[in-house]
Length: 230
Image (cartoon, rainbow, N blue to C red; front, side, top):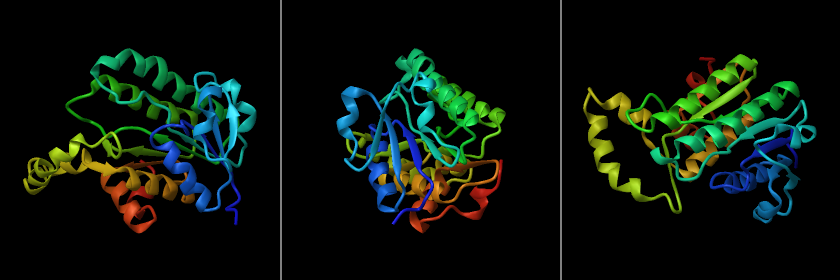
């Protein structure tokens, strides 16, 4: 059974994308994913592959339809302070191209994987993501901005060591808000929240923070508070 509107994904061969595509397909969405020739084998057989370059929106423009939900997941793997230049050259450029194509093709819904902020670390990474959020607003898109801090999963497990410190910080009034906003989410929670966002397009720009990502994963829907434009 098809849910009708297609989903176009950039970054579909990555850490989150390879888990999200089967989830969307199971919900009945026809999925079209951008990939390079050398990575197309990472996509499920039922997923339509578009060969192109995330840094060049014109290479995939004709595959994005007005009725599409456009999910942009492109980003440098294992981000760290030493990759500040890559954040600009890859993350920012790819996002700006995606936003441009989404606006030109008047997509129904644009979903952007950002990062929780403000935060005391990863300033260069946050600056790029915040810039992309501003570009989304300037483009006038109906959009969902997802703001996880760190996504736990295969190859991304070391922050489990921090869970006791998070629990302590959540008990203290002075650190509670930051601990919740910069909390850890699992890969499955992130996938479920993205699928929920695709099923619930907003009018204007919706920002979904870590607590709402967890709630969406648990309730299979976005809470009303997260659905308001902000």
